[in-house]
Image (tube, rainbow over all chains, first blue to last red; front, side, top):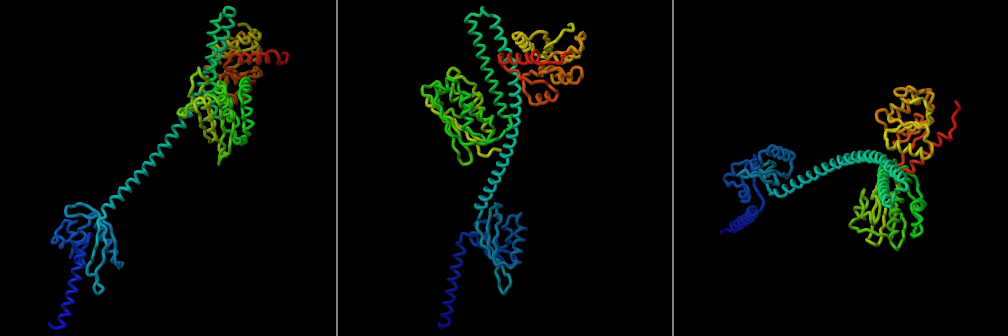
Amino acid sequence: MQPQQQDLQALYEKLRESEEKYRRFVENAADIIYRTDGEGKFIYVNPVSLKIFGYTEDEFMGKHYLELFHPDFRNKARQFYATQFFKGQYSSYLEFPAVDNKGKQFWLGQNVQPLMENGQIMGFQAVARDITERVLAEEALRRSDEEVRKLNAELERRVIERTAQLENANKELEAFSYSVSHDLRAPLLAINGFTQFLSMHLGEKLDDEGKRLLGIIKTNTQTMQHLVSALLMLSKTNKKELDTATIDMTVLAQETYNDTASPEAKQKIQITIHPLPQTRGDKMLLRQVWSNLLSNAIKFTLAKDERAITVGGRTEENKNVFFVKDSGAGFDMKNAGKLFGVFSRLHTDEEFEGTGIGLSIVRRAVHRHGGDVWAEGEVGKGATFYFSLPTEIH
Amino acid sequence: MPNQKINILLVEDNPYHAELVLKALTMHKLAENFVWVKTGEEATDFIFCRGEFTDRTIDNTPKVVFLDLKLPKKSGLDVLREIRSDERTKKIPVVIFTTSREEKDVIEGQNLGMNGYIVKPDDFETFSEAIRNIGFYWLVLNQLPKK
């Protein structure tokens, strides 16, 4: 053999090796790789393409690339590629819904490059990857985002509706409790007066048993009177317009204690009122708050041997917190939630008398200032009632 | 009834309250020449000598009227309005004695020229005390021109 022929042989060998490498690469790639002619008809498809689309090689060779696309997408695809190559793009990327030979839909992300020769487009080369999983995940995310958005909107709507309903109900309750409370006072006055007349009428004829019976009527009437007054107070606490002023809370607490405590209480109870921060608020309502909290403290402390009440307060970030601490009967913390409800009582009448409205009034009055109420306690070890008032009242 | 002198005219639809008022006045010796009417219509009939009170004369005015506001049909404020609208009767002292304290009622009462607004207390002692004070003021203390 001539030396030239040997060189040529070597070259052919190298070329064949190179081709072999390339062929193996393309045929073993996990992606779809294909080539079309200038008009878009398939001239080569790799084995993965056959597997994914389900067509045989022969079936592929007659087809146009758009046949891989879902019918609804074909126009868009055509426009896309026309624009891309009109602009002279070297490469383009498109995500689209594809269909296999059975019509099953899946998603592909495809890179396409024009194959040029002498400045002319000879054909196209494409590499495509199955992105179905990613697309479905995105869609699912979008759907759940949409659902969340709808739920939020629905929730907001319901909150607005409920708030309006609540305000209406409150107003009705207001009018009701106000008028009922007043209407209840009329028969109370009559019972009161006529019990007294009966007593006067019977005079000497009223024996001990008679006195006891009348006494019971009087006691119960008084209970009702307290209840009605408390209900009216609760109603007023809600209705009254806030008359905001700067209040010396130390003086107010002290004054209220002096008014509230009986001589017996003053004598037996050790009260300490620490200097309290000044606050902005409605004096009448705040007086009610102190009055109710202090009379509660007094009531529960008198029954114990250790009798101490402490009143204090501190300024926090944008509010003032006050407390009344007593050494009285206390309560079980698991009942803490019930403390401030209307008519809610944690002790029976025999243990401690009361209407159960006092704390409810405290809560209303404090809430109207934009503040909060809460309590801590331990059975037999006393209780501390806290209330906070924001430094800025509207 | 004949044209008797009249001290207190009570306008009250609740008979139990009326009895309480009378008893309280009696206890404090202020019950002489006391008249009780049950409705607003009867009250104006009495003042203006109409209906069953044609035997009366208009110049025989009560020394004070105790007026409840919650009356059936003609309201207490309407009665007050009528009393104040006539030259012959507009000077009659009228004290409102009622169960409720509606701000609008107090304002209207003031506008119509009432002489007082008392909310009926719910215990008898306080009630009796109020009756005594008001009764004593208008029947004994207060001076009127000698006709």
